[in-house]
Length: 193
Image 1 (cartoon, rainbow, N blue to C red):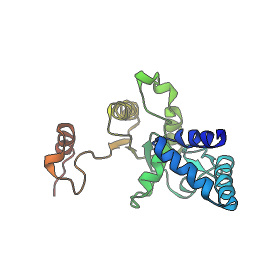
Image 2: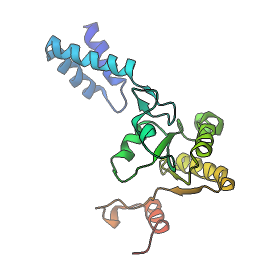
Image 3: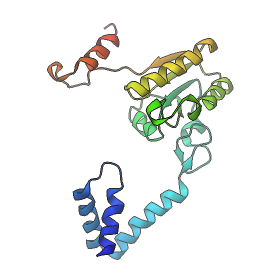
């Protein structure tokens, strides 16, 4: 059953998929019709061949420039670490600026510094667009915070407003379950009512 082991190993290689889940996926594919299995494999191959990076923001697109970059103003740029973060931010529906994907965050442990990120491209876009505000939407962790602070220091002399997405208590969370760091961030990000 080398084919089954290979299929399980392929599913297990996906992020967040353990052996049991990979096994379930593999049996689902085996039990599906040949047409369903072919459609599944064709969807993977099509996505792999058609989806590329937007020349402007670095997000995923089937065209040279994504729909967001081609239709929205660059007056506001939301900076994210990875292309998948754009989809998360777009769920909000109230943001109408463009995005900029850094391609990661500053992480000395992973041997990734500022020169490994798309910071020069961000500076060029700010200049080209006449950007007024840059929103830092990196993860609220050590690397995300360090990256946000580094970019904020770079942009300060340019006269661009740099903001950071708020951090703290999630809606619907009981205070008793919040940790000390989350509560600290919530206090720091408070605003008048």
